[in-house]
Length: 204
Length: 156
Image (cartoon, rainbow over all chains, first blue to last red; front, side, top):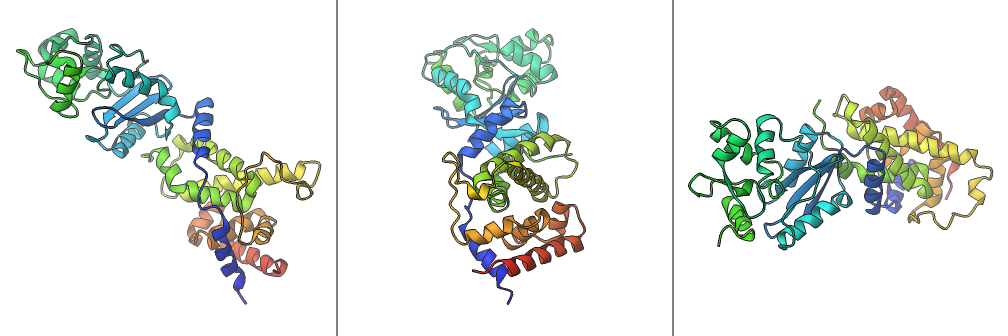
């Protein structure tokens, strides 16, 4: 009789079906402690829908509107452009999520987060650094940030750089408008830009 | 080399790795085996040159971790079998045929791994050979010898 294989297969039903969830939390903590967690990500609720947030040991590296770009797409992008050592690790993003909550509640006007600019190389980085200096409730124009980034004639390129902002909300590309006051475009749709400008008291 | 995000690996294979750990390292050591496996995998991951057989790669790491845990257990002064499970040990339910899985764990490491991956995961011999870093023939022999021993030794 060759029943041992059948018995093994049947008794496999007595093995746990999967690993307990808390092991993932322990794994992420240990990975971070051993310097093996290059990118940690989580999801955060906001009045603009769910946000995807990711950090490296250096700082916040990515914010994305999940309704606009799927989480798996962004995770894939991070694996390709930053490091394949990417894990969902919400505890690593507690501070980021807290500051975002405070901002959306109107209790915070400045983000106090270290930033990892890995996803904003070259001219994009220059434009976004310039953008990061525009304060809460104030606005600038594509032409002005192009000038601030050292290329006054690269207005269209500045617009593209803002469209490629890897950290919307925190790097406030919503504060950059067209010369003359038209809203211009926005990563995540212009209605989100309107919402943020209203939150900051720029729009009535 | 384009590697998938590590989180994808974890989601796809965490169940197989955990079940492998319970079956081969034992319920009391399963959590350790699981964590050691994933930490070692995370450490080696960026240098991985091929991403076409990740389950076999992960289970090879788990196979080695299970062996380490068996060795550590053998080095302990008292035979573990005579010591009650420490209260803090995770209580993993192992109904079905606990004695049978006990017998599986007593097999030589390669046979133990071969028997589990064939009978529970239905792993193809080609993948098992890659896991064991052996020929397909050797993989077949490990399954055969392991099952033979279990038939001889395990009488319900």
